[in-house]
Image (tube, rainbow, N blue to C red; front, side, top):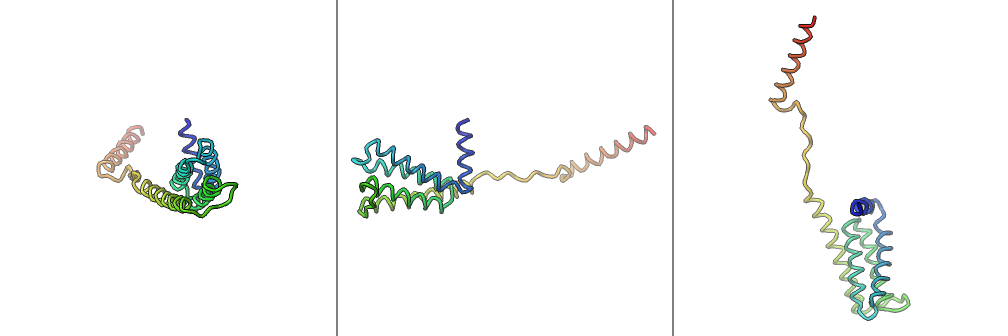
Amino acid sequence: MLLALSRRFLDGMSGGFGFPFGCVSAVGAVLVAELCGATGHPWYALVTLGAVVLLTAFWSSVAAAIGVAAVAWALDSGFVLGRAGELTFSAPAGLAALAFAALVAFGSFARLASRSSAPRIPAPRDPVSTPQSREIAVQSREFRLQSRESRA
């Protein structure tokens, strides 16, 4: 049941909720990473924020994923690598930006690949389209006509 609810919610992300949901998730991911000690180990935040960016890129639009990646980079640069929300432009911040850009690309391509490889269900055939079904339809009409004639 939880999977069905999450699937329904995530399907709604394509309707314009991808960016807000991704931003809230990114803030939550930074908080969790900080509680786990991301100040001493910055890759904790990179992993949690990377998961948010990847999932947003897979479940939402490319524009929303790019926006979430920018917010994730700002959170990482400002609160994990830097202090007090001041953005830092250092080598680790550049690495984080490259990682988030790669995750946006990977998630978007994965979404396209999963949608294009989905099994295509053929359109239902008309029941009177095959020669056998046409013959059966004609025989049933003849039988109905004969039964009407025999009653009269």
